Length: 394
Ligand SMILES: [Zn+2]
Image 1 (cartoon, rainbow, N blue to C red):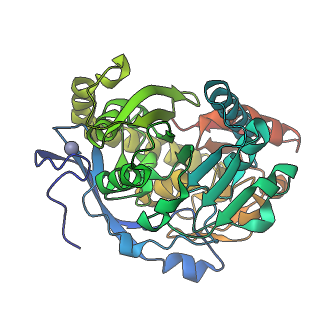
Image 2: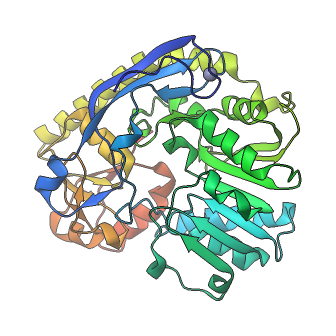
């Protein structure tokens, strides 16, 4: 796979190398059934580069041919009460802004369908969800009768749908040719100038500010700040009318409507190119310092014979385990999603266990991959009579 030499968002050629990892598993949420299969999982490389023209960050070595999205993909966070509260707040926010009763909502990359179902229950909309990893048996609710789910990837063949509202959550970052993707969506909307598009995705600003290298992994080919995201939509003939951070500033939400021509910046949050340049410049040395500190912590815990567990078996954990080259140092990788229990993490070969197994493992230290879940993790441990030291990754 050759490297990309132009920016997939703006076509610019002023690309700056930022971060490089020669070998990482190509998936981190795909569950496999045996350790051998996990260890033999296909690998790719990260060649993270920054476009100095539009502020977009991407993996120039991303090869979509290596990706295998399927129903074995376990990305859902819907087993977390904190996450469900967030979904409900997001539906509430959208319901206040847009009258969606009996309107057609299209969700591209609907995952297991939790958001579309929650939106349908809250607003009375009809809906179509498209996702290669959809699992029909996971959902049940009265609003389900107004929804249709299709196992597919979105493309121009879905042009005839004519939605009133188009949602695309945590999907754009998995796509390499983001410019082409957003232009395709704009083209399928044609003259539908009232259709609202809502995109939600991780905010690169937080990753850069926190040197959160575990949030950069193969599944995510594309990384946006508020500004670079708005610039992409504006170039593709969308008028961006809302752009904000949510989920403790971890996510960005953009809302826009089709326009007849490219649009000019109008929101203060978009003006971030200088800040992004400075953060990108400082990123590599900040990550190296963080890696060194983590290695020292783990060595110190080991010297004291402490048992270490990781809470959260998603992409962040796979990324951390891969970069630190960890093996027997970690006694357990825990997840609250029961569909992951007893299965193995791609690339690293760790078996995922449920919280109940910690009663036997009795960890002294628990690394918390996403600090937003600290409170519920603390409660889950206390309910099992466990009081380990909790170390949030931030
Ligand atoms: Zn660019």
